[in-house]
Length: 178
Image (cartoon, rainbow, N blue to C red; front, side, top):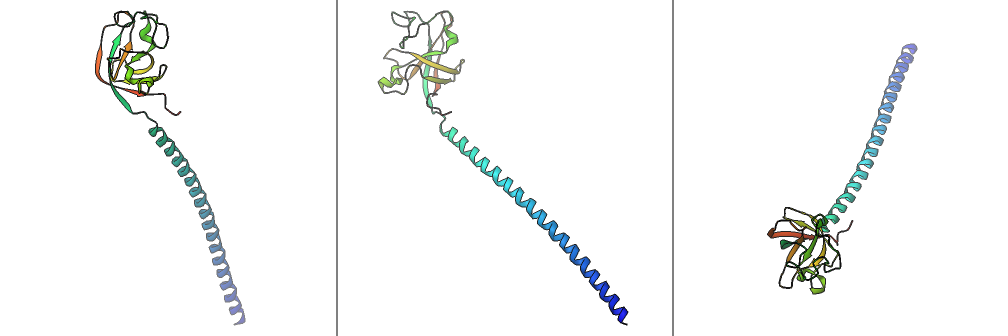
């Protein structure tokens, strides 16, 4: 009988030992899984922080997008009939070659748009012109007659056909943050 009790005791201890070892192995596996999940959460937090930073940068860029300025647009040739008595010299002193000036993307602005008259532009400032057949970036090099208001004049090579637009938009590119 003692042998039977010893045998049952041994079997009981063996079963208990196997049970404890199995549970120990499961606990180790849970700890490994928990550690992996914590590392994954750390990675997600880093990605979230990076996305927050990127979103803030995008919001800053959106805030720096210039407001459109509605104007009329015409075109002019560098000739006395459409300028003053020095048609090959702009108001800022730039010299014009009347043959290929269309490629230079220069404009004149009405004087009300110039800073010296309460506007927002100086000579040399760049604007984006939208709403014409020649949308793009232009440099302000000249000014128009005082009677013109809220208007731009696109400098074109001699021989370019006349055109005008009653409603276009220009955007001040000088205040953009990079």
